[in-house]
Length: 303
Image (cartoon, rainbow, N blue to C red; front, side, top):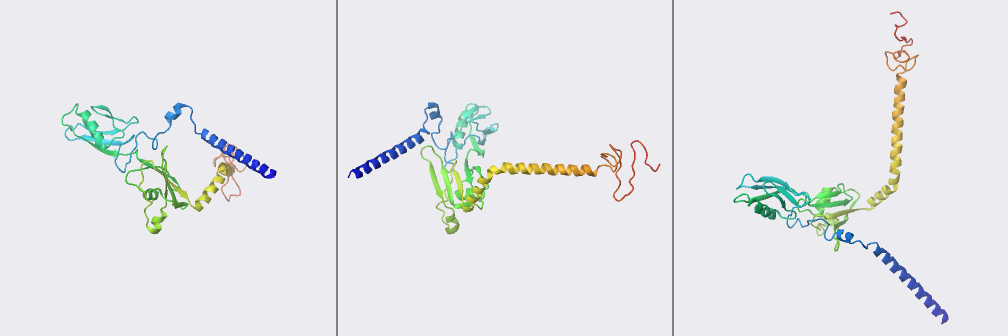
């Protein structure tokens, strides 16, 4: 009995130590995410991807920063202009000055501009036509030829995005991720496009939204390739240095060969067929009796 009690107390002590260690580790990890400065808390993203103007372009087109559109009024021919939304969400139109339009639909922009132009013109009817949409984009990452931001100009599915980006041989179409970032409710959607190729099952071919991140993960060959590149990455600067040294040596050898070719028969460095330093004129190929011309004189034949 005493031995059993001692063993029980030992196990309890070990369990308490393990629990204390786990709590300490969890508290340490949570401490890495605490922010004591209220300025940091105010700066952190509070919604969506972090942009000022968000929406769903598949439902309704709202214009954002950098987008461009034209305005015209058939009843007032002088009202015609091309406007670009600035960083502050404002456009500057002739006759009326600045107008805030960021995050508005084309219909709402027309109403806002029409109200301002009505102060200076009669019977206004402003028509808005988008010409360049740059604020709507998604992102490609992983085993694709094209990476980074891609314009979202139409109803783009995952299949459309992957095919347009170019699939590498190291890509796994059955292991794709679509990430819809959010500070509170992030969404990670697994996608298997192999089902479309093998069975025509398009259930995973979802419609992309603006700021979606499409990640194409590698297959077995891709993992091997990426591992080899990761191992060889530290050696690349040394390889480039060796190639540079070899190129310099090749240029030096070529220069030395050219120098030896232009050296005169008896004198020093001739530099030219017509003489130079050393005064020797090299003989043509096959001439066993070269003619030497001293500087400033004639040849030895007296001619």
